[in-house]
Image 1 (cartoon, rainbow, N blue to C red):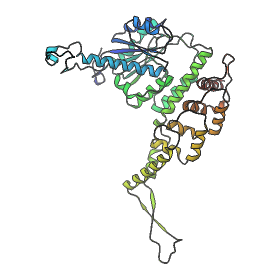
Image 2 (tube, rainbow, N blue to C red):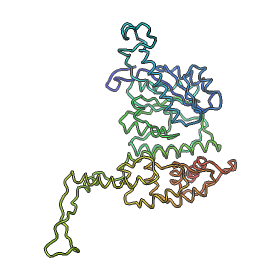
Image 3 (tube, rainbow, N blue to C red):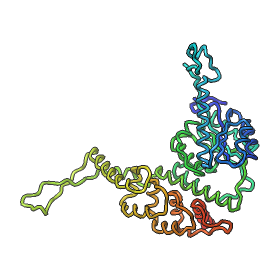
Image 4 (cartoon, rainbow, N blue to C red):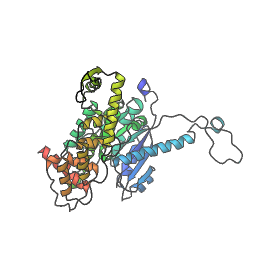
Length: 445
């Protein structure tokens, strides 16, 4: 491993593999064994994300550190749990003093009758392990992730993304990749080849800068945007990795539609990164001449009042702008939202009638509050048409705010056709996926 150059100073010296898995009992053991052959890897963590088979038992038998979600919580949650388990293991290692720990050199003298751990005076200082995320179904090919680890440990790359060769049997929808690619390009100026590649090696510093993760299948898009906008080096690296491809049946179609849904959701959360107004223009307008009341001229009645003009000082302009923003935010807080509106989001709503927007949002058959940036998006859509679409959908139960935003973005695609194999009523998630898939078919045709 090269240590030359400033980018390789204080780099991690080891990597921990994190494998999110659901119902992968047949493949997980081979994947773990292959991952252990990657030079620099000394820890393998498997996160069983609500499996109903023997995934956990097989992974433990393969000597991996295993943690299990009782129910399926999604890929992003599994990745976060895995990273947390690596941090816990490292905390335990530091408490033990590390491999070079010596009681005589590094710990307080023992006290008679004391049975607890000895306090460490000079703990072994190490850079936290890099995190290598692998798919559970990679099998023997997992070892081919070696170039990603080499790039992070030895070359100074902060996030190495695997460029996979064509996968046998793959039947993906190009629109998902195009959507993610365009979104990342717009937010960062960098255009990835495979924006949805989930096999990544990332330093702990970069990982923490990307938290919290976008939910579900939007996590890769979010990771790329957050790492790049935080100033980290992201690089795509060819790797001969192979995994089970998603088929063309209904299950595969719904999976890809869910991917697109989550990618759109992740991009919606990042809209503030690309302002759609001229900041210099806004700055200059805030300090334009403002009217100041002047004394009434001699003989003038109360019905007549002239105004003189003067240029506000910079401090006065800032104070007035802040007061206007505070007043607007106070009004926006009455909307069904979770969290506070940023200054950019407040400006984006402009002169929208807040009372009318509030009434329309509350008419939607939605359970829960919207994120502020989702409100900004919905304010520019036909909320009455959206309410009608949601009420007429063959769905049991209420939609989530995320479902409503996604369906709003595809109102022009028409009502989706339900496959004959799918019984009604469907779940809100299934219906949303079908809406997305109908929009994909419309664009592809």
